[in-house]
Image (cartoon, rainbow, N blue to C red; front, side, top):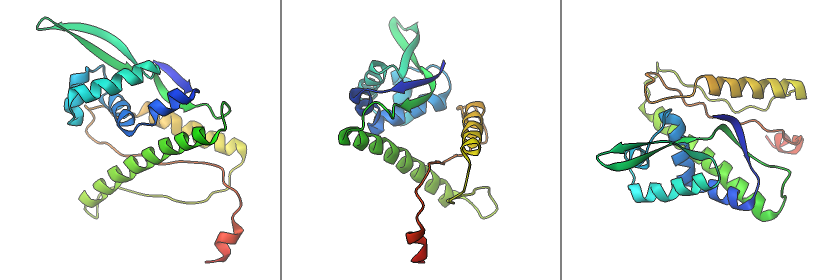
Length: 188
């Protein structure tokens, strides 16, 4: 598996921005081993034909690939895996409004799915169970920002959940440089 793949065309961005495709891809990461479309459909509680369509689209943009085939009861089963640990969107390729809109769809889908999963876990927790949320503005140098980003990337790579893991945590975070917003803070 490659370290990262960069999507740069409008077609690639549109394909990955579909929320079902994003869930399919995330679940391939979660399973942590090659899986067929049927296995993925069962895992997600979806119809195999629907998942097959989305898997074909993910293969088209090279974020999923055929790992191997097996003969199962005379039928050739195809097992797929993600092609890279990380998927990046090329920020310098196109600054058109449509491109920016598609990137916003991707970010929104990630946050919406993370929020749903976080809230579901929060509702099921007892007061003594582990869970923390941060939403803070912090001041970082470029070097410190890079260190935080590298640390988070390494943490995720080394501890990516597989279906065999007993204890699982949702790490739901983002980091982005912001403009100084003294006006907003003075209204408080």
